[in-house]
Amino acid sequence: MGEMVSRRTALIAGGVTALGAVGVASCIVSSGRNDPQRGREKVPMPVSDLCFMTAVELARRLREKDVSAREVLEAHIKQIDRVNPKVNAIVTLVADKAREAAHRADERIAKGDEVGPLHGLPVAHKDLQETNGIRTTYGSLIYKDEVPTVDALLVERLRAAGAITVGKTNTPEFGAGSQTFNAVFGRTLNPYDLTKTCGGSSGGAAVALACGMVPLADGSDMGGSLRNPASFCNVVGLRPSPGRVPTWPYSTGWFTLAVDGPMARTVGDVALMLSALAGPDPRAPIAITEDGARFRRPLGRDFKGVRVAWSKGMGLPFDPVVRKAVEDQRTVFESLGCVVEEADPEGMADADEVFKTLRAWNYECTLSKEYAENKDKLKDTVVWNIEAGRNLTGQQIGRAEVLRTSLYHRVREFLNRYDFFVLPVVQVLPFDVKTDWPRQVSGVKMETYIDWMKSCYFISAIGNPALSVPCAFTPDGLPIGLQIVGRHQADWGVLQLGHAFEQATGLWKRRPPVLAA
Image (tube, rainbow, N blue to C red):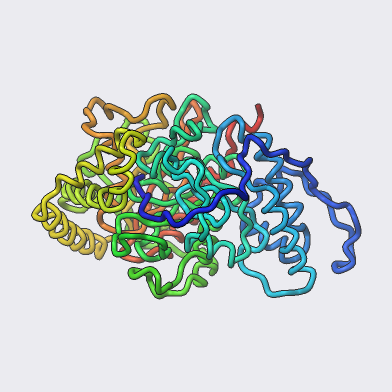
């Protein structure tokens, strides 16, 4: 939510196909021919197997030539063609570009070239990420026809790792808000209930994953945009430590509230994607120097005796159904060997002032040009954020930094006593897709369009890594996510605990009803 920063560059027209105008070829799930390099006949693989296979397994089969990149791509394009019109997750499709890339990927495998960890895997980019030669709108009428001439660093790294870009995923205007809708492409619907929101701002990414349109998707997170839609769509989203995934172009390069990161259907797939995204880059001044390859190691770990703080709610209102769903999973952590105690860090309420102040400051910094030249084309909440930033005093910004430092140290000391902090991802269930934002939570009035997301953005304010992992379903079949928060820059440990929980519950295997329609 609110991750958009100054990424606009000189732009050229052309080279892109809008999704509605694409004619998708019929799916080829297997060639049926003999493969002389393996000395055995290839076994046809159903479309659903390719579209819902884990990225880890799919990458292995691609390397071992059990399946070709072209076959994998065509299966996913067919899935996009079949399901996307029902949910509006992918808003720009570049099928022809992707086919060319898949052909080159197969040629490299045939020649025995060394390939990257994501070789041949289809991926979709959030429509806030600049993509060279592919339309990038930021969900804004101001940029509805813009086509960048550069790739964002995240896109560079995914392509370098062998991933194949299939298109762009929907987002609210400039990533503002956790409900995915905009004046360019409209609303993205929740595949578990088409009358509900998918969350945001990485909502298109979460829906594309849930529906088997791609095995991997990128997102971004200032106040919950990797975690909230993951929770609402039964997928996995990691808000990495600031600098873990370096960001460029970025006009406020030292800003740490907003991060880029991976989304997938399993924790293992998120870790695989993170291995390609992480690592230093001189263009990103806060980049963590640790190489990303460590995230390709096995995630298994013994959690006997590991201390977990089970949130008492941080003084926030929660829908009772959400609280009970998460509370019911406490026994899973205990069965893993964890020592679970109810506890919250002290003074988390300070995170509200910290987040809102620094967020407003960043909005004013990064969108002042759009405000000055095209205020009438901006949605009201974006205008509100920019104007809040313009009204800030130096004293207010300084106070926010002092409060944030104090809060960081309180949480650091808290996590010296506990290894992890567990709480709900979102305070509410997926709500009506026609409702821009909830006006109340459990009877408590929400003053602004982001107040219902405090369980996410309180964590953003402290800068610790946080993972949303599928936790439960309501009796009506709506997904609920659980949030695992780790120590400072302890992204690996968060992934390990999330993986253990995922293996114990198996909830990621449940597919949305829209697929059967």
